[in-house]
Amino acid sequence: MTYQSITPERRAAFGRKLRAWYRLNARDLPWRGTRDPYHILVSELMLQQTQVSLVIPKYAEFLSRFPTLEAVAQSRPARVREAWSGLGYYARARNLQLLARTIVRDRAPSAIPEHPDALRKLPGIGAYTAGAVASFAYERRAPLVDTNVARVLTRVFAPTVNPRTHSGHKITWEIARAVLPRTGATTYVHNQALMELGALVCTARSLGCPTCPVRSVCDSYPQ
Ligand code: SF4
Image (cartoon, rainbow, N blue to C red; front, side, top):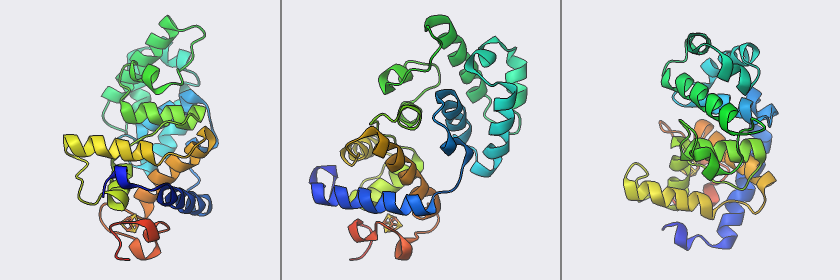
C-alpha cells in the first residue's frame, strides 16, 4: 500500500488517534513552550544528530548567551562555537551564524522567514528543518520528515517502502503531505506527535505495537 491508497477515513482516524495520544503523553520539552522562530531554529539544529537529554541544558545555555539572531550574527565565530561545545557537529554552529548574518544583512526586519521554500534558501536549512520551523514557529501547514517520522509513516502506510532509497524518500514525503491535517494549528500538534511516536513508541530498536495508539490503522500491525 502507498500514499495513493490512503482513504480520507483512514487518514482522519490516524491523525485523530495520533494527536489524542500526544496530548496525553508528550514530553515537556523546553522548545515546545515557545513559538519564537529563533528559539525553534536553535532547538532543531541542536537536535539534529544529538540526543534530547544533551540538548536540553545546552539549549538554555546557548539562548542565555545569544538571546537573539542578531547576537549570533554579531558574535565572533569562536564564541558561537564555544557555546556549541559538547554537542559536536560544529558545522551546525557555523551554519547558524552564516544564516543569522544572511538574515540580518538581507531582510528587514531581521526575521526568519515562515514559508518552507524561503527557509530552504538559507544556509544549512534542509527540507526537514524548513518544515519544522514553518510548522512549529509559524503554525503553517507544512509537512516534515526526519528519521523517526519516516519510520512511523512507512510502517503505518507503506511497509514495503524503504525511506532510505531515493524513491522511498520521495514517497515518504508524499505520505507526510497526504496525511497533514487541514489547519496549521493542528499541523503543529500533528508534526510534534509524529516525531514523539517515533521517539517513544515506534522506535528503531523495538516496536511498541501492543500499546501503540495507531495500531488499528497500521499496515505493519497484524489486524
Ligand atoms: S503499530 Fe507498531 S509498527 Fe505500527 S506505528 Fe505503532 S509501533 Fe509502529
